[in-house]
Amino acid sequence: MRRPRHLAPALAASMALAACAPGGPSAPAADETLGVVASTNVYGDIAATIGGDAVAVTSIVSEPSQDPHSYEGDTRSVLSVSEADVVIENGGGYDDFIDRMLASGDSDPVVLNAVDIAGYAAAAGAEPNEHVWYDVVTMSALADEIAAALGDADAANADTYVRNAEAFNEELTALVGQQEALRRRHAGEPVGITEPVPVYLLEAIGLDVVTPEAFSEAIEEGDDVSVAVLQETLRQYRDHEVEALVLNEQTSGPITDQVGAAAEEAGVPVVPVTETLPEGETYLSWMKANLDSIGSALEQ
Image: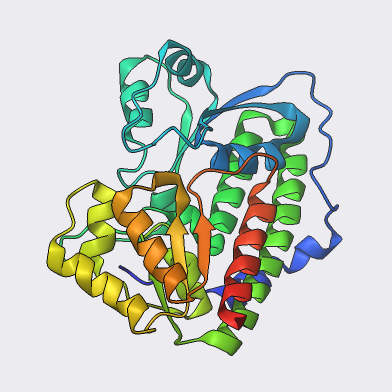
């Protein structure tokens, strides 16, 4: 996996003006609302936080049972995309249904691609890890892009969008600080995963992901895991070579259940994570909860 940029100092500096921002989204004065469509509720929440009452956000994938990799969309989703002023997609092959919907219509919304904004390039012919919403630095850059796109479409509320993005970024700065605190205490410690979903967050903490790539990539792609790779993965837990297992509970199956059971039997803490936003959470509260859970597991 390509390692994320550790830009915490630069991020903190770029957000210095956010200290004067309000604690939450400001209430815009416009009577008209902009249409924003997000591929998942992760990006939908960020858009709603920045847009406030001036935007109407539709999140196409919002249930744990929906897999963005295989989602095909429906008539309602296609209509929402066709009427949107701004569309936010993850990119990197994660939510190609958005591109298909855009290609099927005549609309021309502003399209924000999080992987492109992240600037992760393919290395040695391999695709970059597309799960960039677990990279809080990238989400700061995305927030600025959302504010700019909304401001271009709605100049009357442009300053409001900027202030809301600054307030959001101030909260992200706190998350970066939490990451750095965990990094100081646990950098270099080995952890396991079932899929590369949380890798950006784990690497920002300085953790060493030791799960064989052949295992995590096979699980992500829905391919068979070879007996040798599975046995090596299970051995890491039996031999206590892993401090914690960070498990994507949204795409569990017999193989990942077996790994989770091996971790529990060996007394290795299991930290569940998800790909979409859990009910009742915001992006900010969700990422903080993930960091809290990882920190608690490493302290055991």
